[in-house]
Image (cartoon, rainbow, N blue to C red; front, side):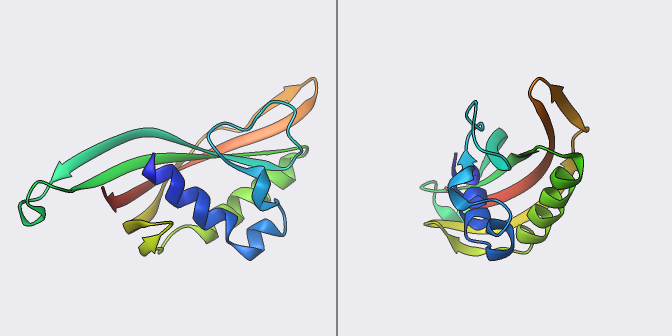
Length: 133
């Protein structure tokens, strides 16, 4: 879950993004039902640990795929959220939320999705997060 903690922290502390989505509407995990919109959920898809000899088996380099789900009441707003998310995340490295982060790199975007009752638009974007655990 460290990748989720890293990504959520970066997003919740980005002033351009929090001007659109309040920091308390950026969730680690799924967006709760009946949350105020717009909202963002940050979830882990898969993680892979690699032990490195120089780390003497006490720590490992983790590559985790983290999915960011943008949810809003309009298609245009979901697209604007994902643009801002993408601008907020890449090229972050160093200690983030207590974790030593090597990199955050964009991966893939999911399909356009919607619900009709209530009207809700959402889309996902995945990021590869590398950090030391």
